[in-house]
Length: 340
Image (cartoon, rainbow, N blue to C red; front, top):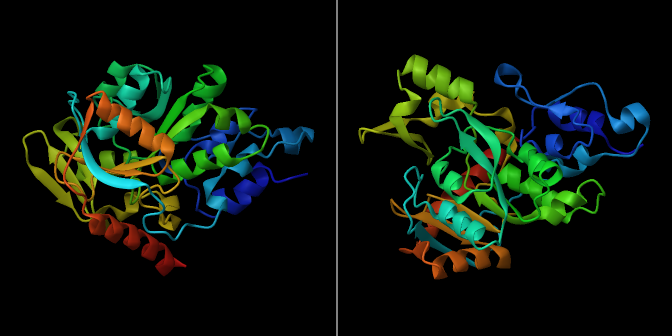
């Protein structure tokens, strides 16, 4: 018997290092792995069945795709082809920074370069996030600005995109742990991971210091303690501190130490700030207000960006402050080293 969910549970779930990315949920052929919300959301659950453990049928897909079983990367920026700032040249009302990622994906959908986007959407009233599959340019624009710093098992929606709806040109947009899991699918020769690897066309990684538990941060810290209503927020940034831009133009700044108990436990072992395994990395750090920092890492990333520029949906901007990106990246690597 090979490695299975019991090994994954012992090595990752029970040790508090689970990224909660949702990859194991997506690849389980028996639909036996799932997440709960709230206090019990630290790691997944199994419903008591496993093809390998219960029936002796070789599987191990969940173990094969888990990003936490690999050594934590120590690169600050990783390998890249180019780095520059950019902004959307189409109206994107809820954009987080320059709207560049949305513009790139809208163009890719319009041009048939991709046929679906696995991403985060949020409830417009509560801002509660969830994983989703988007195939419409209009829906993609309307969901721009969804806050990836709030945890959701994003990769779980790959099962809907690839297995249920059978899309074959999928783009995945997520934080570094999501990117690491998807990269394992792309690189694996595991029979149960191959359908996912063959169907993923583009991987977009988002800068991330850590993700927060929605219930703890929004319901407790923001609503209950600070009387901040989700509907009054228009932007949520983590740049060494938590910055919340309100609809009235004011800025609420909260030191990260004040929301430390809202950080997902598995984030504390992550060293990757810029999603070094992606085709294209994006974030607000290093670029002026209104622009997005783009790090082009592969020919696939280069192609979709260049195509968006040529079609007038994206334009480049001022030089990126690479040192600012390296500084936050270095801090994330150092944070892990301090805890080991």
